[in-house]
Figure 1: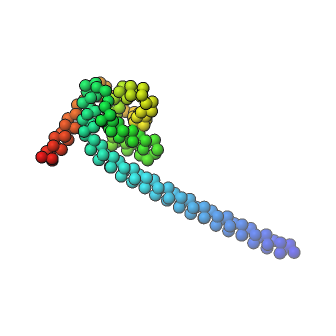
Figure 2: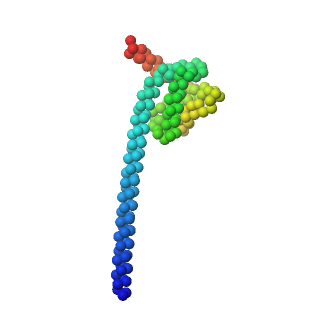
Figure 3: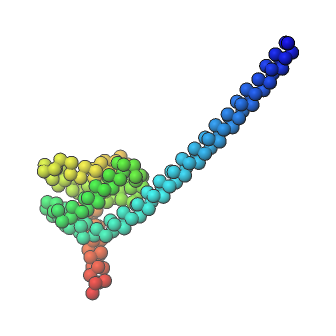
Length: 183
């Protein structure tokens, strides 16, 4: 009787060890598949973000008319006109996409950081005054600027003036090129 109990105990112990090993292997495979899925998701998200950035960069290039109006008004301290609010709305959209986690702060900083900083710092007072009428106006643009500001010092007045001059020269060249294409 003791021999039978010992054999049963030994077989039970072998079954438990076998089951533990099987469970360990299954868990290892599940973890491997989860890690693969996570890497695949991250790669996909990066690919989508890169595609978005390329499209947004192209759209930003097409805003030369709004950029020209904005630079002209900012250099001459005129109020913001609804005619070129499209430019601020573009940055508002970037801020929303950043807030939702669709775009990465680092990628935005590399592609648009110079313009985000320049346009925000040049127009900050205009936007604050505009908020007297609508409190949340361009709040995602401000969020975008504040997120990128963590890695950049504020522009000096000379740097800001240089930014506006270079934007004015670029937009003028784009307008001249458009006129040449249409003639």
